[in-house]
Length: 119
Image (cartoon, rainbow, N blue to C red; front, side):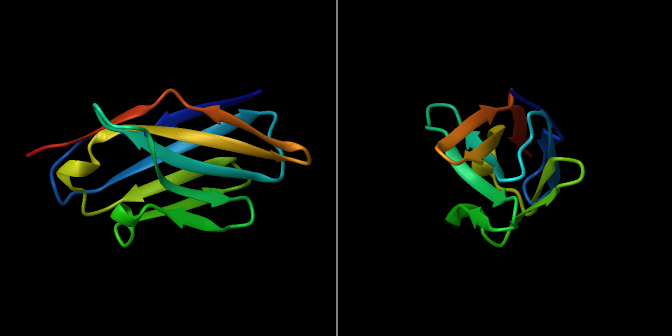
């Protein structure tokens, strides 16, 4: 099992910045992907960004150039730096840990942290 603890959500004005953190503990494997997803009311959960254990990243088109993702493997922590936040970025942000196994993968989710963008 993997436990994920998220932090950093909150209220921010349009154009502002927030930094989310997600620390993983438990059965941490070397090959993994850590990422952030978000879900706004009435919408499906969507990928925001993720980063593999060897540093490969993926970003949703809507956040490219505004968000960055990084990780500290020694701390098993992933960070999402969100700049130039827009109203449409408002959602519950979920951390996801994917363990890459020889026979497939195992996925774990955090409890979510609210990001509110409002003037």
